[in-house]
Image 1 (cartoon, one colour):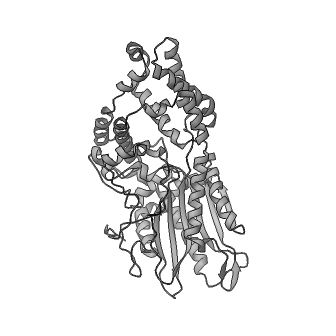
Image 2 (cartoon, one colour; image 1 turned 90 degrees about the vertical axis):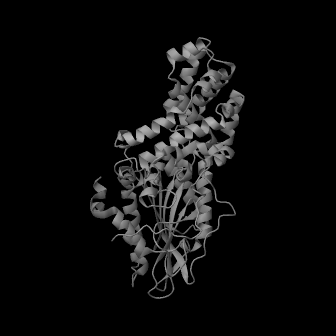
Image 3 (tube, one colour; image 1 turned 90 degrees about the horizontal axis):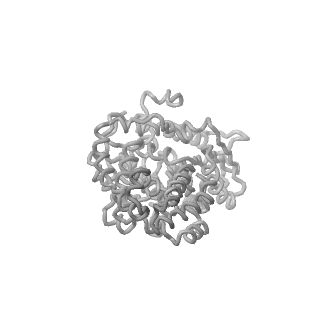
Length: 460
């Protein structure tokens, strides 16, 4: 069954996917790309009231782990060793010596914790869980099922990565503190990675597409490493002979932007060791220029870029989408059954804790409104598609299912991304205003996207 891409005209927003240069200048922290902090919803973010007679009965969720230490220990070592070698031959400026002190502090205190969740990340998931149970308390309460008081069941799946498991623990700890009798099944294992972390870094097509590389090269050529080299190194001949300036620039930039995810006590120690030098290394304009190139890279590797011949990048979301459909079928089957076994419990939530590489292709595959732009001029990509809105730390998708007390009424769903209502390219339900959709329409739409390959997805 094929659907026309009919955009819902309701006022549904995720912090607007369109981004101006002026906004980036006001918020240079956005240029951190996938290292950006989670955009907690403020008081201005309101959820649309459910239609009369409807209440939520199931949530399907996928969340990225929260803020973490940089995930590559070699980056910390590279930075320190490069600067220490230059210092040994008096090739560092006064600023460079401060950066060396920062690098030494990072090697001693951050490198042993490479990839670990920080307390910032813990608090992000605690906050999301707190708001989920506040927004949808029916999901977690003991229910009267066929005349029987029944404790809800929740399935929770996590990547084998420690930061995902700790994110899961932080999230569920909050829910259990309010609803201690919940029946919860926890799972984490390699067998789950096909839908929790399906992306294969060895299977990339973006780099082979000349249409992409031509556009991408234009953006990366605008990234000028020379001013930073002059700030840090006092001997240009030494730099030319010993350092890959562009490589150094990019690695330092990522280490630097990731520091916003670290705990306040850590940042205090880092600033004390280096006189706060890390905050002044890159100008706002330099950060924006580099981010444009980085944003285009994420878009082309796992997004909806028309410059790539196939849909290979977003296809990595198929396993996750199939799991979402399968788990929803289980929950709905139990909820709509005319009888319930003595040991059977309603499944009221499926929570998944994974990675940016799980969410990014999924959002494009599902054609969520903020993630499905088709842009060929990558210099203007930021006007329609931004990585920091799709894959900040703790980014999450919540699909909320509603049922009616009226017999024969359809199941409705709405989509939240980072706790904000978003649209998909289907007409909204006749029974309700946007952002509510009939589940049978949504399911048919996504089964059509999965197509004939659906039966073979688990073998990919």
